[in-house]
Amino acid sequence: MGSRGPAPKRSDAVTRRNKTDEAGVATKKVAAGARVKPPAEDRSWHPVIKAWFRSLKQSGQSKFYEASDWQAARLTAFYASKVIKAAEDEGKPLRAASMDQIWKMMADLMTTETARRRARVELVRAADGPAEDEGAEVIDIGRFQQDYG
Image (tube, rainbow, N blue to C red):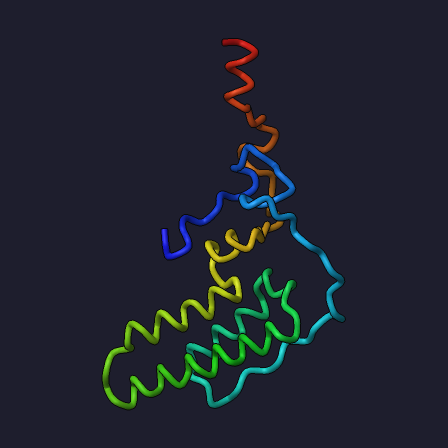
């Protein structure tokens, strides 16, 4: 569940399609800035963090990133790299509190499925071929019971 409750369901698994969230607040939309070019990773970062940062550039959620999001990603990478390198230098395991902080920073960048669901962002892959259940009808059980119950 986590500290903020369970992750919301995917939109195709939700029966209600309200225009507002649970608190009755509608999403406000504003024009985004110009297409942002992701910054390069720092060569001094830990190899694992460099790989994570590169993966952001290939991930679908980065289509939503603004310049400030990329700077948040750079700060996350900088901090995570320092934490990992310090642990390696001292020959000690990573501290749970540090890892928790890094994980939260990464979640703010929508790097996990759960974080994307909380932000109501769904990434959909183009199918290589027709899906097995393509054309299957989704039945609303409540309506079915009303009509035939």
